[in-house]
View (tube, rainbow, N blue to C red):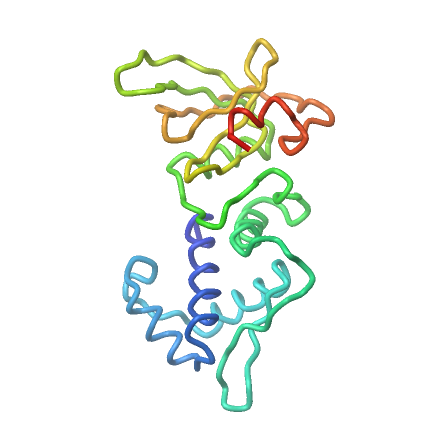
Length: 210
């Protein structure tokens, strides 16, 4: 299953059971098939549901309980105070790459998480320390500028996603994902700068308005 689809499936299960539960497996399946954007009208087999249920608990710490009437409901988890979208994203990426990666330290999310066409491609390069290049256009009228970037972190601010990356002169620069064009993965590996953190980098504050 593609990473973006894993994310949407986990998110769908979490919010469906949270908002409409307790639900039987049959009820969950009926709602799943009704959402053709995810299911294509195909049922979710019980083994797949069981696997997702286990992953949600093992990776996220979100338990889906089953009562004596075989109805499923979300059990609140007190171990983590992180935003649920951030936890769901961790799960999707950990499934794709490695359960040892501390993805939540590389991504700062606002609650209204939205996908971006280049998000997963950049994230894969970010985790593997591979440079990306792309054309960057501030406005439709402005000239496109070619950029070669070491991808470090993502930040969402004011409903926009930003890639924080290091350019050739050594500066860290935020790039709005909406303005990135023709993104390409290179074969150039880079060594991340020791100790760099977008949370502690003061010069980034003015860019994000925080």
